[in-house]
Length: 311
Image (spheres, rainbow, N blue to C red):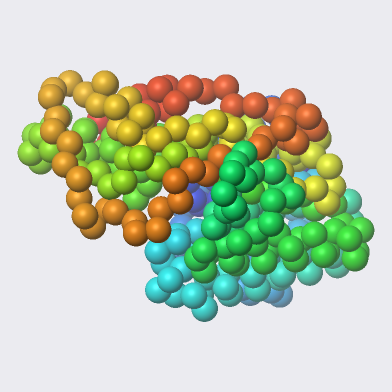
């Protein structure tokens, strides 16, 4: 199998390269000229907003599977730069799908990576969320990802293209940016242990329940969807069991080397936090046999070890 990972410079890209390579795939990756890819493989510079550059690359690499990871994936930035978010996540995706539609190789499978954020303001008692749950996105990023998924379904149906849509829920692990909660807690603890800040950890809402999956499990799901996913289908990717943020904090503190005070920071509170978000992952389990295997405790411990070694 030969894969082309579009947008491989981000957090997930390196893990996906490693996962596919470990199973004998021939992996190619793309990134912007000012970016780097963390794992070793042939790397091509590509901006998906330059539509004319995509088809020549597809014709050169001739992949069996394209993983479309390139995105503006920050919710906060999507509020500040909605036009940029829409251009990358919607127009960029259309550029990729158009290039795939006209590529010399016509049996390419495409995995479009969306987000659990697409469900947005969910109905009361709707959890666990099945893939048939109506989408009600609550921010610009989520809206563009919902649009990406709908466009993917249209291309699959209208042009008989082999496209699989993914709605990935929260995933974490070593080397993730500390703007995300598990990495944030672990970085703060590592900084405290090194004497870089007082022994106080700042937190936001600890009662919200969210589904967290280790990134190494997530990329295994992506590989299996590349191999076994049903064309035209949408798949939730997540643990299928939400935990409250308090559990994440308690787990992180249990690995700390010294006592740490917890202090709530008003700037970290969200006025409209949804109490519970949890996916139904029975579809991906049935079609590929996948389920999350790495425990939350292992994810937190490995992330803390990463920050201890990289501050």
